Structure formats: structure tokens, C-alpha cells
Image 1 (cartoon, helix red, strand yellow):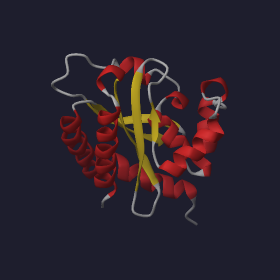
Image 2 (tube, helix red, strand yellow; image 1 turned 90 degrees about the horizontal axis):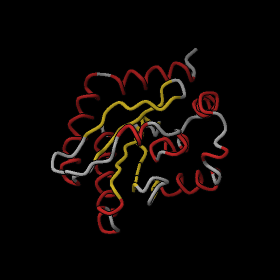
Image 3 (cartoon, helix red, strand yellow; image 1 turned 120 degrees about the vertical axis):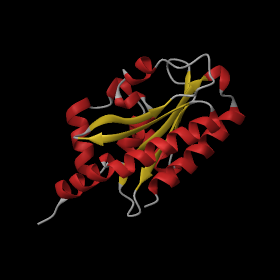
Length: 180
């Protein structure tokens, strides 16, 4: 009988399918140009955070080094925290198998997870390396997590007004990706 594994295969097929991938690329390009900052879409695959698409701004001379951002623990990235917060119980178990307990990488994990679920977003302003980072979940129309859409920007270029704009744009992008 169909179970969690069957549903997971269906979601993977949807997220990795050509139509969604093309829509993802178009959405990231459109909204990156509106905020002029880097955007990323990450999903869970076997309990691991996998970047499916990213978009870089064309007009920024100073950019965030992607290697520095992507080389960090799932628990230290807003998209990673979104994936953890909204993971199914089975995916959460796989996350723990792959990354271990949050421990020193995320000391206030339980408090933060409740806040993230309640707010429907994750903001790290600034994070441990001086970058302002933001992420929102992207769910299908049945409420199942497809992935996390995020944006990161140097702190000097993303004050409170820009942060508000980034979160609004991420919401629009998430809504557009969630639409069938």
C-alpha cells in the first residue's frame, strides 16, 4: 500500500521534474532582479539539503561567496532550518542520521523551530559571518513541503527596509512556486 516512501518519491519527481525546474529558474531570475540579491532554492533528498537552483544578481559588484554559504551545516543556514522545521517525521529522522543532533551548531534549536513554524519564515540577521539571510518554506497545495526559498545579502546592504522588501519578495516567489 502507498506510504511515506511513495509520497516522497512523488514529491521528488515533482520538484525535480522539468516543468517545476523551469518554473523555478524563471521565478528565481524574476525575483532576483527585483531585489538585486542572490536567491536559492533547496530541498530535502534522503534527509540531505540539496540546492536545486540559485540565481545571482547581475548588477552587484560585491557578492556573497557561495562556497562560504553552502559549506556550512544545515543547521546554520536559513533554508536548512526551514527544511528541518517543516520536515515530515521521516525526513526529520533522516536529517538527524545525516547531520546528527543540532547541538553546538544550533543551541536554541527547539525554541527556534517553534518560532520558525509560527512565523513561517527564518531570518538570521546577521548570521555568524555577517550576512543577512532569509528563508521561507514552499509547500504544495496539500501543504507538503517542496523545499525552502532563500535570499542572502551582505549586512551593510540590507538594512531594515531592504529586509522587509526581501521577505515580501520571498513570499511572492514561494506563492508562485506553490501554485500548480
